[in-house]
Structures are given as C-alpha cells and as structure tokens.
Length: 342
Image (cartoon, rainbow, N blue to C red; front, side):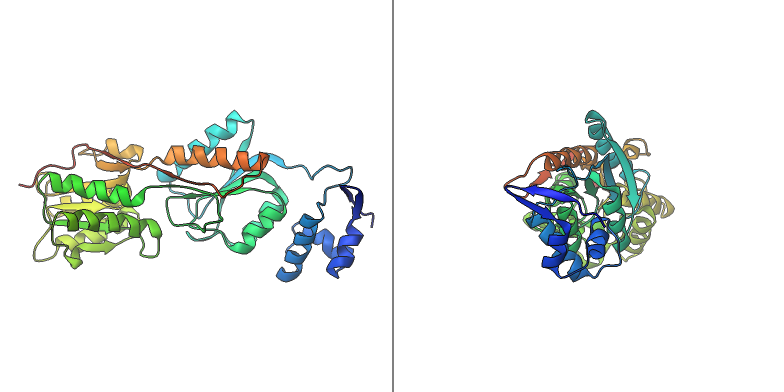
C-alpha cells in the first residue's frame, strides 16, 4: 500500500509512522481516513488524535478536498417550521457559492450513529444541526476531519464547547404572559413542549415569572406539557377546558400548538378572543392567516438559519479562540387572538 505523506515543519510524516505509533495496521489507518464503521471506537479516537497532532495531509501537501456544500440535519421535517430554517441556511449558502444537502436522522436530542459515517464520506464544508446537542464522540470525529458544526438551538441547551445559535426562550414566555396580564387576564393556562426539552422549560419559566410577579395564582392543572404539534395542543386544551373552571387565556409554546388550542376552543363552543384569548410562539407564516390572526412570540427562525450558516462557514475558514454562542432576541406580535376578558 502506498502511503500518503504530509509536511510537518522539517519532519516528513507517513501513514506508516502513524500506524506504528498507534499500534495498528495501515489497513486500519485507511479505514479511519475513509470513515469506515468497522473500527473500534477507542482505536478510531487514538488514530484520529495522532493524525491531528502530526498535521496529516493528503499526498502533495494538500488536504482532502471538501464538497462545496453545507449539510443541514433535522430529526424531523415539519413543513411549516423547518422551512424557515432551511430558507435561512440556503440564502447564506448561495451567497458563498455553496449548495445545501438536507438530512433527517435521529431523535430531537441527537442524530443516529450511522449519520456520522455518512458525513465523514460526504465531507461538507460544515454541518448545521437542529438538535439539543451533539454527542462528544461525534464532535471529536468532526473536529478530527476539520468539519466544523453549529447547533441551531430552538430546542435545548448545548454543551459549552458546542458552537450554537439560539433564541431567548425565557423572555419569550415572559412577554407572552405579560401581554395577557396587561389585558386583564388573571386565569391563565400554559401548554408547553416536551418536559425534557430546555426550551419548553425556559418558556414555562418565563410564564411562571410573569404570573408570580403579578401575584397571580398558577393552577397546576392548567400547566400541560405537549409535543409542539397541533394535535397535542388540541388534546391538552381539551383537558384544560373540560375542568370545573376554565381559564380566560392560554399561552401555547408553539404556533402549531396554538392552532390546536383554537380548534379545541371552537369545538367547546368558545369564541376567540371573546371567551378565550390565545398566544402562540414562533410566528410561522400561517399565524397571520388563520382566523382570527394569531398573537404570537416571534422567534427569528430564518435569521437563526442564516447566522448558523455564516458561523459554520467562518469556522471552516478560521480558528476562533472561544466557542461562539449566539442568542437572538424574541418579540411579541399582537394580532386578533387576544383581547381583555369578558
């Protein structure tokens, strides 16, 4: 097998040298370089660390070329919410002459293990991940191949060493609830997202802070965890509205949940906003076209995609001294689904 070589100042390093130092065969080195999965995790980490320390480059002193693309990874595609992020990433990629490849993998917390093998083969300029975090072993493998990554974080709280772009979820929950309180509502319920997602808890904490600051009672039966989807919002709203006393307003942790609340209200014979005020979260395009148009918290999803793409391109071009973390502001958009209580 012919060995590729690299320049390391005055020293010329071969793959045979790396194999000897790692105590493995040249075949194993080749498997690691080609992203093969049939290498033990500990062996892969040791080889990649040695390659990084020795400054290994492909034959001719040139790094293995990367594909002219940014990889955007979701755990699921929601046609409304996801498109805002996709459009943001695509607009910046186009400015830099790059294409976008879209991958769906894993759960909301992290992509599947087979995803990392694929991205090693594709070698994009960078990766934008819409997940709560990325497992340490995945981070190390991307870094070993000089593939930067950025987590777009509407859904969690990434590790301190993970570059990320997020939004002010606590402030969003606060301003939504304060809006209802300022209208005169005192009986307010909240339907948020999954209980194991940081953004769900942050938005709920903002709700609690506004209620506590106003000296208002929080009925524990009026706090519901959902799944950020319309059907879940409808089911949780039905539970709340079927109680012995109903709220005059509901803060929903997503616009899709708010649409489900709107459906539940109509099925219960309630008028919005005369009998029940509703506030959503995200400000997806559909929010302005439903009847009545939805009051909501604007989460800058498109800009989050743009900033994540800019950041991953920058990380591909330079080494930054600290791990970049960006939190974008949220704002209230008042439409017709909220009004003073009857």
